[in-house]
Amino acid sequence: MKKDQSRPEILELREFHTDSNGIFFKIKKFLFSGKTPFQKIEIFENENFGRVLFLDGLVQTTEKDEFFYHEMLVHPALLSHPEPKKILIIGGGDGGALKEVLRYPVDEVWLVEIDAQVIEASKEFFPWLGSALQDKRAKLVIGDGNDFIRETGEKFDVILIDSSDPVGPATVLHQKSFYESIKKSLKPKGVVAAQAGPLLYHLEQHRAKYSFLKQLFRISRFYAGPVPTYPGGTWCYVFLSDEIDPLADIKKNPPSGLKHYNLEIHRAAFALPNFLKEQLS
Amino acid sequence: MKKDQSRPEILELREFHTDSNGIFFKIKKFLFSGKTPFQKIEIFENENFGRVLFLDGLVQTTEKDEFFYHEMLVHPALLSHPEPKKILIIGGGDGGALKEVLRYPVDEVWLVEIDAQVIEASKEFFPWLGSALQDKRAKLVIGDGNDFIRETGEKFDVILIDSSDPVGPATVLHQKSFYESIKKSLKPKGVVAAQAGPLLYHLEQHRAKYSFLKQLFRISRFYAGPVPTYPGGTWCYVFLSDEIDPLADIKKNPPSGLKHYNLEIHRAAFALPNFLKEQLS
Image (cartoon, rainbow over all chains, first blue to last red; front, side, top):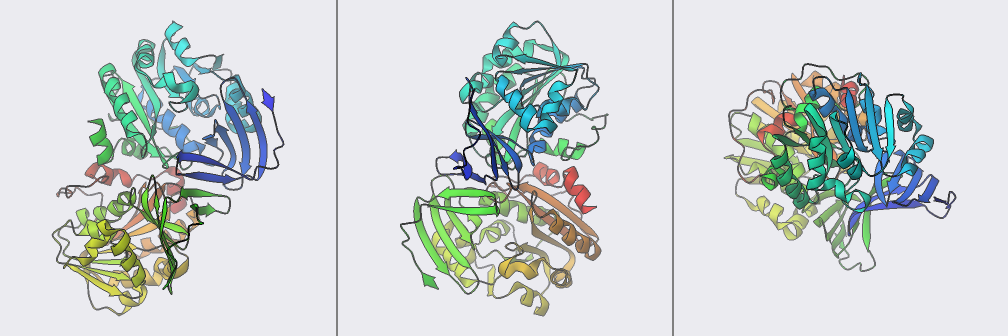
């Protein structure tokens, strides 16, 4: 990886949400910049959001608001499943989703990340997430999530798809054939949760994705929650299962220490705005 | 008002959410800039959000996403009240909240806006909102909302506080004495809904406000919903009443044509994240 840790000339970074709008962060201290075979990694310190990770110019994680995303990706699935023991995370090299999963009495968590440098960067610059990667229940696989899921003989109680957006290395993780392989790797009562993009943008992608997901899984529900630094500030996820309905009564209590998620938030997240319901119907 | 309609040199406008982060809009066409006795008004066209209104450098309304805010300010109160006939809006000179109120069979809607130029600008540049201001059920009062509510003998079924933030002309609209006067102007079964600031920022303001609101009203509930162009992308509101609980069963159906609000969204909006519940308790 080509490193360039100084870059004193950069005073701010922006993410363009469309060609004509987006967000900006003033840079207090530039911590890291490098180009891997897969993407460009940039890490800096911002006065308000703390440490910020950009991948290919898009906000991936910030110290201040990562909990919104990681809690909402992980807990609806882990609470809905009666006894989640063996978990797979596709992507998620920053360790944030893994950290949330490890709050449960799970036996093993496989994490398949295509870019080893994201894992290394997280261990170094986001140790409060990256330390989860060193837990003895975590099995790290450096490789392509789509190849892994097509070739593995392992089966899981819960599969979490913590991919980046459907551009760049993660494109294939948003396609039907990938979800067909995911379905084959689920144990009975298996549950999938996947990040599904912004509420405000790319509605046609939600529609296209949902049209094949509802054919593949008996229960297929979009849900949403805030992520302040993601485009539009509200992020969508999809919950998939043939047996488990996330809106059925949940008998368990969430783990302690969560900043956002609780059982009221769980139920509320599945209430969708009219415009999204129309798009998905 | 000092007008300066050209400004070809301005290519984008930003709103700083803190000193170190915020959002930016490229300007397709600058439509209007003027300074009133109360604030600076800027209106421009953005490729993605359409027409955008800035007041004192803060996004007030955009063509694309205003419905999130206006629907969530208005409909929880109007649906919860059994028969809302006489409504007061404090602020809201753009006409967006008024437009939502006029979807109901109300008799009269008083709108008290301190800045006549906001009303004029909305009529000219946001006619799909501003046209509501010409409805014969609308009674426009140009004046200070705090003075109005202290002096009026009128009483209302629903009072909506569509103020700007607690800086500048709207500071007093976030204080206890203002809400004491609001309470005195409610009819029996009266309901108040007020914008209450961002979910992510100014948590100490939420706490301070809630501590006096829950003393004043028997039922006092924060709720939240997305507003992509407001700081953090999720906005808070507060529902206040001595008699009406917004979480009781709602017997009415929402008006047709809403883009965001429905009865599931209504109930969901009152589910609060752990960090906010802790702050308010």
